[in-house]
Image (cartoon, rainbow, N blue to C red; front, side, top):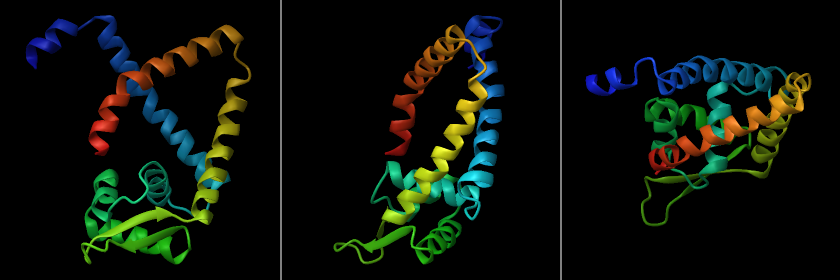
Length: 159
């Protein structure tokens, strides 16, 4: 690891990594605020993250939700219980394993998620509206490259 750090120090690779480390958390804070304030004010950020995870991974287990959130299974269970009581998530027992459950979004949960994401997307578009077409195309290219660079890793960790 030390050799790798020495090899990339001061290079465009390190500059990109530094900018990503600074920019992504700021963007995520903005999105969380927008979703909470305008999209789904009754959802906590962890609850919203559960909905997004279940949208991407229908039928996921409670332990995979806990792992995604970085919390214990009992903590994830409390979050999921609240979402189930609100009618946003369904919990179904696996026929082969009584103690294991499959979690999926309800139609209402999917609608709330869509509304929250749409509200945040509108705010992002509003912020970007002042940029030139050339700058927007640069951002689009950069975000696409970033997504492609991380896609395999994110998919690998989700399984």
